[in-house]
Structure formats: structure tokens, C-alpha cells
Image 1 (cartoon, rainbow, N blue to C red):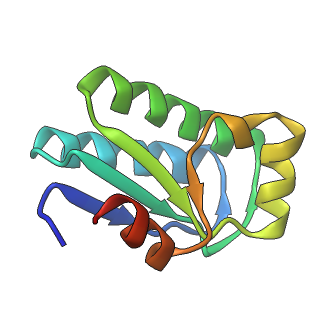
Image 2 (tube, one colour):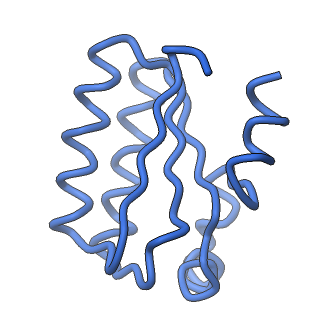
Length: 106
């Protein structure tokens, strides 16, 4: 895997606290030259509105820096939140890391 790709795997309830921590980590990675970030949500059991807001903030940061943000392994409760808020059309998502690898890291 290229050094320009970084995978983050939050777990548990993804809220504003976890979102802010992830945002700091992604900012640091982008500052270090990472061009593609994959957020693997396989271990996230629930996401609240502040967690969703953190992901939107990350998307903005990534676009401003010319980097790309992808999401994979979205659980059913998180997928429901994405659909209710129409965020499923905002984020590019993949079923899992293997699908991401086949589509993006060809």
C-alpha cells in the first residue's frame, strides 16, 4: 500500500469527541503528505450528529488540501443515519477495505 494512503479505524460510539480526535489525526496525516484517507467504520456501533458533523468537516479539509476521503464498512445504524441525512450521496463509500483497494488502489 502506498505511503500516500492512510487508514483510520474508529470504534464504539462515534461522537464529537472521537470526531475531533480523528480530525486531528487526519490533519496530521495530510500534513505529512497523505493523499488518500480511508475511514473504516467496521467497529463503529453508533454515530451521533456531532460525529457526522466531524466527518463532514474532514471531507471539507480533505477537499481543500487536494486529498481524497473515502469511507468503508458502514454498519446498518450508521448507514441509516447517512440515508436519513442524505449523506450517503456526499461520501464515497465501499463495502469493505478489499473493495476500496480494488477500486481506488489499482
